[in-house]
Length: 499
Image (cartoon, rainbow, N blue to C red; front, side, top):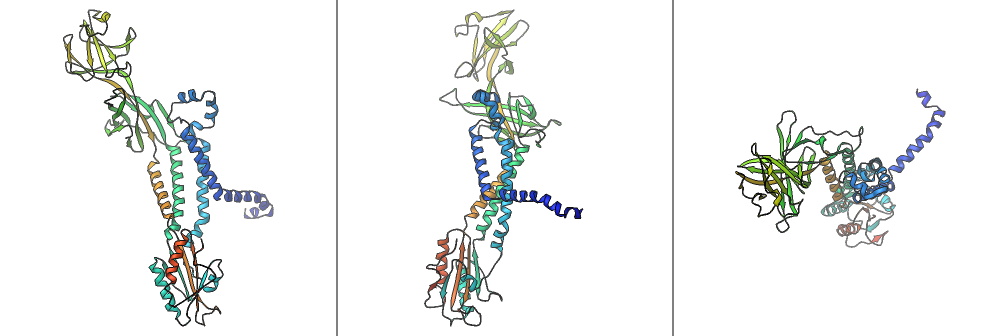
């Protein structure tokens, strides 16, 4: 097998594919490609925020809005943009661009942080930007190096002393975290992309309109959509049931028709044992979360249900019938008498408060219906929602409330916590990247470039990724402490680092 793979013919056969792979790796790991992919992703995100998405807007409403253009835009995935194959492909390419590109410069960047390299005066003089300072040859080299080391340490530098190979040299560094910052930033970006991939293949959204007292499974919601279509979706659907315990609406005092807040009290019920797993409350801008599933208060809608009290006993009636074009409910009192209950709603009739008009049917005759819902009609009982009970047809009747259905939007996003951690890592890397990283090489030397004669100059070379003028000022303060009454510069008109 090895002999076959090593034949010249086999090498020529695989050579084009090898070059193609190398070209692809070089292209995908280039900074230009990373920036280009990031621009495409940013433009796509802007388009996704401007165009309606099917997870948030009803498909029928989108069709009505875009008309004949809907099939073409939908085929491009613009209404499900963040989960479309082409957008996920962009994210995958950007992820590999970040990872492969990071590995290309990770080793040299790490070596620049961890390695403590010394340079002698000859090598420093060979650099493109350096400066040389004359010193008195009568001062012993150990004294000069000790003074420079102390001066650098006072400026916050970590100083590495000379060794046998470089006996007259110092290396100083400061702000290593500034070099670690870009690495952590790249790691944070990669983690964010992983979180996005996780959510793209495991999340789902659902929306359901439910009445108080109703229970439903998440999978039974009126709208239910996974982030990606099977068989590429790998998430799970909760097996518990959601029970709506209570739904409350608070209205503006000065504008009774305008809701101020609406709140749903719900319970999560185990389908096997019937036990309550957790109780929660969700309202507008205050979602309820349980094991990755978030319940949002989306909307509400009037129902045909109404709660009354008859002789103090709560009764729920359903106005699901119509008489003369008006919905009504029937509640029997005995074999000969029934109550006809006509609701007049805040949202259906434009009233400031909900109310009901109640008539009694006795021996098959509906009393007072022909005279209408008038205060003068003594056969009609008008009750306002929440008001005190009144006597009617031999009973004490009160109107508790008009039952409203609550609209819950549910989103399962197991990647949320991982995304938060990734963003924290990314933010930490960005903060660390702002720390300037300084490097300084300093060496004593003479015209003969030997260690047999006493040194008469100090060669300095420095590098700064950020704030080079700040490093120049620090070097000025360090060199001012040279043990010599006067000195002059050679090789550069001013003390300053390379950037």
